[in-house]
Length: 167
Image 1: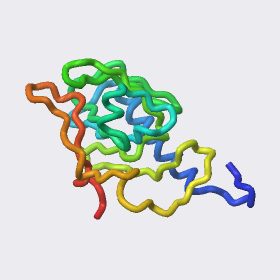
Image 2: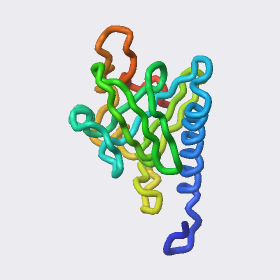
Image 3: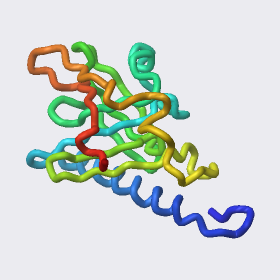
């Protein structure tokens, strides 16, 4: 993890450790289900290498997408690099594969917990720790709309996370 000038990259170490919190939280849900009122909002970069989502979702969310793990999801899996989940979009189950490095925000609003990550890409790539202008790659997060098509089906919901961001 050393750079050419032999500087310890604490920024990458911290990002890796915090992504471990996300991994561990998802693993808890895999093992035991969601306890109480816990639920996760997970925002990820749809252009990130390794993200696998249906083309129509990629077209609708070309920069970032937020999914909600709460009531109806299945086939949840996580390892050291990715997590997978099947959600319903317009009553059609879709499998999503999301590298942990693609996650930009992880929130559990039931306990007022949120993590926001710098866009690292591959953990071995160099990155500028200065926050980018705006909140996402060319996208205003306030433009995200809920993707809820009525009824009791709350899976596949896409929400704005502005209320969880520090101003």
